[in-house]
Length: 191
Image (tube, rainbow, N blue to C red; front, side, top):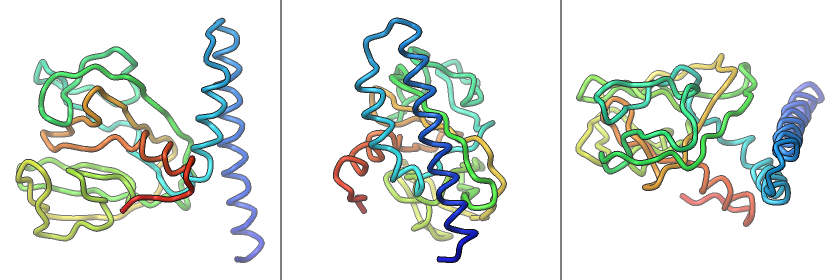
């Protein structure tokens, strides 16, 4: 690893630590008793967040009304369409600062005409995006029609729901929050 890439990795790690500290401070100011768990979650996610980049800002999440909402406008308690296609409440929404030069994203277009934008490690219908190929079929019978890779994302988000996922254009997308937390605790990323 050369010095410039090492410096960028350290810089990204410091951003994540600072964001975690800021979140902990905001919890403290609000008088909430979640400082310990918040700090623990931030430290657990630090090494894995360098691999996972979630969904880019502007992603349209399916709502039970048949409309959509941009992911960054949602909050805990809101109703969205869950992984199984039923209305579920958001338990947690997490936002992240990305390195637009290094974070790899994919735009995956499906047979129903929907395109899901996400990082290569995120799961669609239980399958990591980086493992998808033209013709792959994910949960719900959605077949991959096209895959385009890109960079340039500055902010990404993920949602934890009551059923562990959500829908984008009718396509079931897995929440990665619990998997990132588990990987941070164990040091292992599941297949």
